[in-house]
Length: 139
Image 1 (tube, one colour):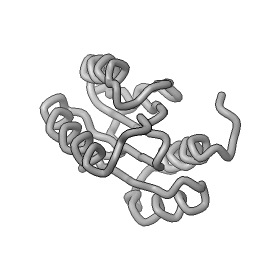
Image 2: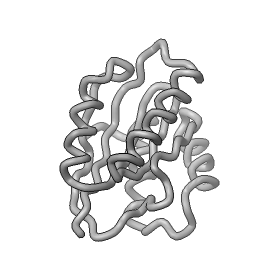
Image 3: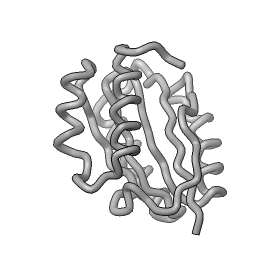
Image 4: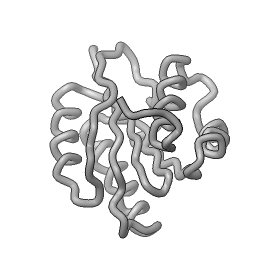
């Protein structure tokens, strides 16, 4: 079965707090489980980075909901590809709160990311984390 993997970044709303993040995470886990979506959501205090994977139609529906969500803005798809298997099979949606500076965020992620995460996916997570940390220019 062919799956879709989509990576996006966005700017978090200025008024988001820990309770809001927990609510986002909880709702994502419930809805994603129903839709067959797995993935990783990273928040560094100002930006979101998310990799979602699942059936094409379910990803399309989720992207439309995300575009309308007022808790973030500046939604930009950074990567969209077909994959043969899931990279985050055990995570209906894992939330990683990382520090805003890239080298600290990288340390945070190294503790969280699965050891068997495919190298290209690991590299994409790190590259996109660097991007939202302001270390590299946005494409």
